[in-house]
Structure formats: C-alpha cells, structure tokens
Length: 289
Image 1 (cartoon, rainbow, N blue to C red):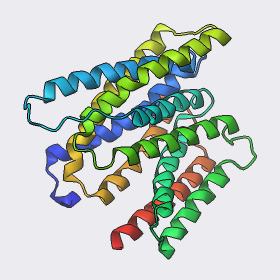
Image 2 (image 1 turned 90 degrees about the vertical axis):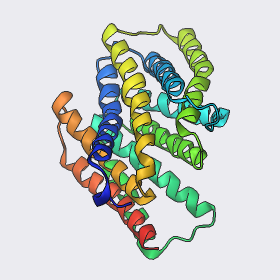
Image 3 (image 1 turned 30 degrees about the vertical axis):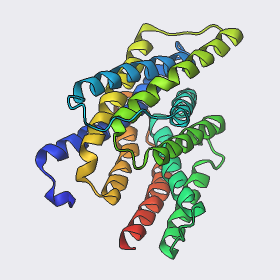
C-alpha cells in the first residue's frame, strides 16, 4: 500500500504516533533540565508508567483467546532498559533536537550495520549514505561553542544502539504490543537495581513536575504512542515506516525551540541534513534493490 492510498484515519494515527515519539525527547529534556530530578528516578517513573499503560492496553485488546500472545524476552527488556536509562542521563546535558538526531541516527545506523554484519552487501549508494551519516556525526562533534556535550553524545548514541538492537529483537513478532508490554515489565527489577545503586552513591531526587512529565512520557507518548504505531504499521511498507521515523528528530527539534526555548543552531541543521539525508539514501537504495 502506498502513502497516497492510505486512509485519512490512518494518516492521522501516523501523525499522532510521530508526534508522540518526538514528545518523548521534549518531555525528557523538560523533566531533567533544571536538575530537580535525577535521571534514575525519571527513568524509573517512565518505565513503570509505560509498563502499567501497556499492560492495560493489552488487557483491553485481548478479547479473543485464540489471538497470538507474546511474552517478550529478558534480552529485549535489557535493551529497553539500557535505552531508557542512557536516554535520561544524556538529556541532562543535551538539547532536545540534538539528542533526537543522535538517537534516531544511531538507531538506523545500528540496524544498517547489523544487516551488513549478517551478510547483506551494501550497494554504492548505501555506502555513500552511511558515509554521509557518519560525517554528520563527526561534524556535530567538532570542537566549538555549540558542540554537544561529549558525555551526553556518547550516552545518547548508546541509547540509540540499544533501541536499534531492541528493534532487531522484535522483528517478526506476531504480537508486538504484548511483547513490548512484557518487555517493559521486565525492566522493573533493573530499575530497582539502578535506584539502589543511586541511593548508595547519592540521594534520589524527584520533583512533582518531573514525576508528571516522566509519567506522561511512559504512559502516553511511549505506551499509547507505541500502541498507535503498531496499529498503523501493517498499512505501511518497511521503507515508508523507516522514512517516516526520520521526521521524528525534526519534530523534536521544533518542539525544543517552541516548548524549551532552545536555539536551532546552524551546526545542528547541517549535521541533521547529513545524518538523516545519508540514512534516507540507504533506505532509497534498498527500496530500489
């Protein structure tokens, strides 16, 4: 099915899902920017809220006892936890748009490189795209007053790598919503260990405002956002789904400008064009192939 053939209702759901994914970055930055909340507490609230919302959605959707029911996996839960924890710690020092570009660029490059290691031979246009994307990352990190914090960059790249592996683990799932719900649930013991480690080192901090933002990030923009995305995925080709996700960093950057009063720097714009444009070249080359 082509994008032109999509029903208006499906298009609205696609827009809602993409806005939800971008809002995760905005909510993360808003919840962590003033230092009133530590990243571990924000991560804990987000994952627990997401788990509760997804389990509720699974309960409401499973009316047919014969329907396939996934149970997720512990390695899926570990990748999900690694993504969420690194995401929160990175947004202590990164701007909203910068973090989203690094995150989604790392996700797509992880999937591309995993495909290469599994035996897929890249075409010349794909190699060009990968080279442009890596050049964008290098340009983004060049020394300068508007360069992102190196530690934040590494953490967000690790979050993207973890989410890339989580995506690869979930490929072929017959019940993605249920698998995601149980993967979220499996992060709870990891959250407890993270909080215990924080308590041994420092005092956890969680403001009321950040609690609400983390809960919204987990329950609404993650839980409901994922549910909407899985609802529309059958209407999209893999290429369409991949290209649409490249809009998320753009929406997140705009959200950072409007809601967090962050500047939109020339460095971020040019780096985004290189990173997202390079990934788009890879997707187009695979579509042609």
